[in-house]
Every structure is written in C-alpha cells, then in structure tokens.
Length: 349
Ligand code: 5AD
Ligand code: SF4
Picture 1: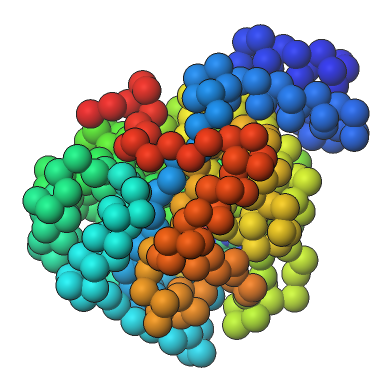
Picture 2: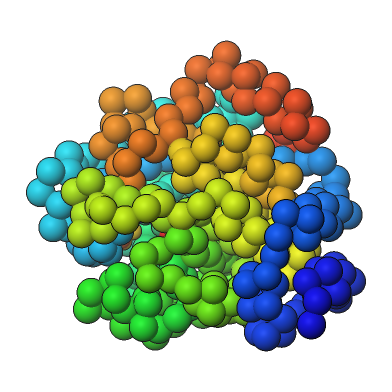
C-alpha cells in the first residue's frame, strides 16, 4: 500500500477500505497531507464552487440531563451557569439573524425536558410563520421517534446529532449509562422521518486510536449524512476529562479532508471548536473541504454560559461589523459567503 495511491483512489472513487484508511492515517506525512487537502478542496469546488454557507446558531438552553464526560454542560457540573431562552428571545435572535442574511437557524441545546414537544412545535411554528423561506435545523440530542416526527411535521428541516464515536467501547466509556445502539437508532429514525440529518465526531477524545477514527470515517461513508460536524475534543475544567490535551488541528483537518472525499456533497462545517484551538482553524478547515460556518446568534448575556469546553471562540456576529469582518476573512481565504438556504443537493425536502 502507498499513501499517495490511497489518496488518488479516494479522489477518483470517493471510497476507501478500512485497511486503506488506517494505512493513510498511520502513514500520512507533510507531502501527502498537502495532496490530500488539495484533492479535498478540488472535490468541494466541483459541487459547491467557492461557496461557504452561513448558519446562525441559537443556543436555546444550557440545562442538560446527560452526563457526557467531556462536556461542560453535563448534569454533574455544579459550577455550570444554566439558562433557557424564552420564545421572545429566540424570535429576537432569529430576526437579527435574518437581517444579517442567515437563511438557516440552528436551534441547539442540552437535553432539557423543559423543551417538551409542544414547546418545540410552538417555537418551530412561530419561526416558520415569520420566515417561511428559512430553514430550521435542530440539535437537541436524543428524543423519541414521535418527538422527532412532531417537530418535523411542525416545519423543522434538518437535525444534527453527532454520533460522537463509532466505536462502541469508546462511545460507552465517555457516555456513562448510555447505550451505543440508542444513538444509532435515533440517527436512523431522523433519516427515516425525512430530516436532512447530520452525524459527526470528535477528534482526539482521550484514548481514541486511529482504528477508532477509521470506524468514524466508515460509519459516515455508510450512513451518508447530509451534514457532518467534526471538531477537536477540548477539555473543560469542570469535567472528568479536564487534564487531557485537546485534539490536534492537523488530525482534525485530515479527517475533514477525508470526509469531503468520501462524501463529496456533504455539508461540512469548519467548527467553532476548530477556531477555538487555533486562530487559523476556520481557514484551515475551509481549505480542507469545509463549506459551512455557524456564527453565534445567541444573546450576548448567555454566551459564556453555553460552555461545552474551555476557551470557546466568541465571535461577535450579531454586530453587522463583525459579519463584514468574517466575510472579509472568508474572501481572503479564497471563498465567498453564500446566503441561500444551502441544502445538500441530494436531500432538499
Ligand atoms: N470538546 C469538543 N467538542 C465538544 N462537544 C461537547 N463537548 C465538547 C468538548 N469538550 C461537542 C459534541 C456535541 C457538540 C454539540 O459539541 O460533539 O455533539
Ligand atoms: Fe448534554 Fe450534549 Fe453536553 Fe452531552 S454533549 S452533556 S448531551 S449538552
């Protein structure tokens, strides 16, 4: 086997076996990394040209009933400052976002039972009645089939639920008491209902090996999500994983590029976590095939409270000036901001 051949095969066929992916991750060096990124960038350009889609992120609630070992919002973190946005506050964020040109709103939150199906249906309908042409993406964790269905019928278009890790043992070691199969089942339900679904994983979870990452890459290839969120693990001081190192920029970028080659049409964010570990993170993510960024629209008063990991990048995007600044940076990197809804061409409702 040879790294260059594997990259060229990935580029031509959009596929590679477990063995090939493992060989690639184990043996990639500076030169071959350059080729991988070049091929990933060419692939994104084939389908999306230079476009970067903007999604306005609204962080609904920092309450969470789960206890994921890595996350600052975990239930056992007594130092977390919890909040919930009201319907009026959510609508204000949405209006601000629409003015800034965002055609997708991502409603994200911890797993908070306060946001019942009825509450979510009310929120989704309120947003859709004011902005019928804008897309709504939900990211509210694991819920029942019925719950996902009700929210879909109310008008939600997309759902992000990272699979976090496709290795059962690693998954269960960082999600105490949470069966691996349950998450898989949720992802299947979302797809069956008709959502444009997003999977995704963290890079550099303590104990994660290249074999684990290969499982993630193969899972993503087989599940064929419309979106895929990939970011480095970053420690949070009030969690059991506080003393571990964050995942590397380089490894994350390599995974982004491989996912772009495996799924040429996937919507792939250059994530906030990537910007948080390195000032060049966003740009590097875009160069490796990323075509989405998700600036924060949450009210300033709650931003610090939505703390998944330490040193999260805070982009002051509600300020029109910052919108221009982001646009400028994207342009400087050779890309263009695109303000349409930005559906995955294979999954439009
Ligand atoms: N580091 C990196 N990513 C994290 N997430 C949660 N906690 C962390 C952390 N400490 C990610 C998870 C989740 C998404 C919303 O944020 O992958 O799915
Ligand atoms: Fe809750 Fe999500 Fe954090 Fe897990 S990752 S503790 S489900 S907010």
